[in-house]
Every structure is written in structure tokens, then in C-alpha cells.
Image 1 (cartoon, rainbow, N blue to C red):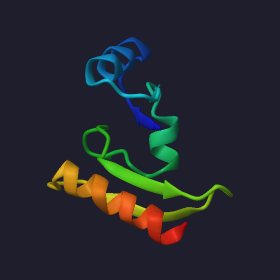
Image 2 (cartoon, one colour):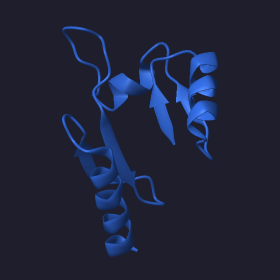
Image 3 (tube, helix red, strand yellow):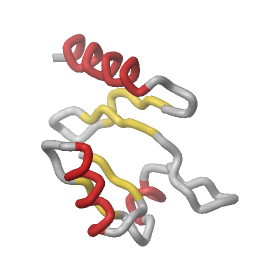
Image 4 (spheres, rainbow, N blue to C red):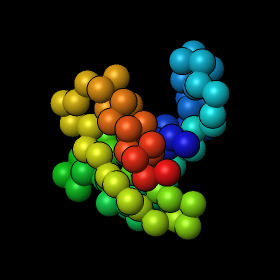
Length: 85
């Protein structure tokens, strides 16, 4: 799943535009962002972080996407899923 601080309407438009086969969460009050420690304190903007969470709900990997190539990032996450499965 994906989440951002955008509205539900903006998230739906973005997901539809990108052809995502999954829903995006609208964390407009930043509750999830604060829980996952991805809110930049000085700006209130979200950091770009991916968490790989196992079926029991444990975070097994985290990835900081700052300056990262998104295709390479996706491959790294998929490699880790295969490794941990």
C-alpha cells in the first residue's frame, strides 16, 4: 500500500493516472506519518521511505528513497521479498 499526506481525492486521481492496482492511503492529519517517523519536523512534509512488513506486522526492512532511482528501488524490494520468503 502507499500513503501520503494528500487528500483522498488527490490520491485516487494519482493512483488512476499511474494505473496502480492498489489503493493509496490519504494521511491528511499525518497520524501514520508520525507513527512511522517520516514527517520532516522543519517542514511537515513526508520523507520518501518504504517499509517491508512481514505477515505478522513486523518491519523487516526499511528503505530511504532520498535521491534513489525508483526502478532500482523496486527491484531491491522485490529481491528482499524473494530472499525473505
